[in-house]
Length: 228
Image (tube, rainbow, N blue to C red; front, side, top):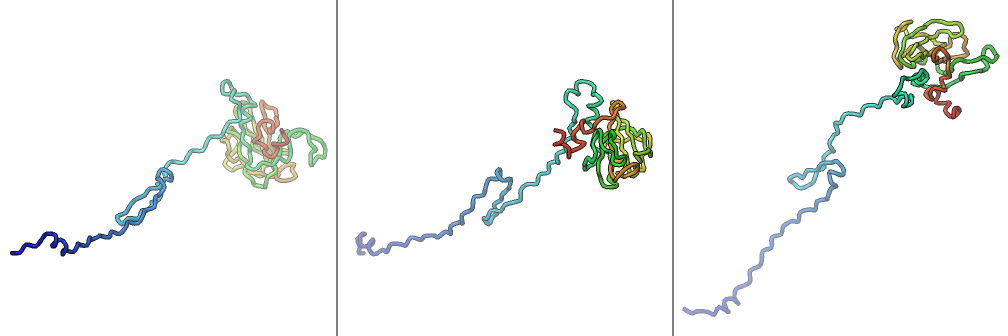
């Protein structure tokens, strides 16, 4: 048996080709913003793509409306409320307010002479609902000479409000009825001595008429500049 040198055997053997396994490169995934920043959730599926889910629904209860702020000074909380301070909490009797005649001396449109106007007039379309300025009891609800259909409500702390020239009263109300703040008591008319549809509104403190525009600006938003 003939033995060949190891060097010749190594020369005759061809080098084996290295097998390179080609692996497909995975596609790059886009980096999404953090869920803490935009409130969204993400999920990676088995196939690879990233799916964005809808943000979580907020089932929080709606916030309750804030109560109306009182126009009474804070000092009134530490002592009994005066008549004028209580009168300043009255609510305007109409939704849209345009004062056509102010409190005090004026040239009466029908008498054609200067007379003292004991309230204010609101020009408003015929049939506009009139609301009680504050809770109280109806002391008068009838026709009165010059004022037409008029309602008078007695409130707390010696305050009364008067509503004149009404078209008609609320059918469910009568003298002695108790009303709440904002209840409809009647409708704007032109009864009595009147030149057109309007509401004559008076505020009485301890039996004396006072200027409603001096109590609170809520009675005349169109007169804010005139009173400054």
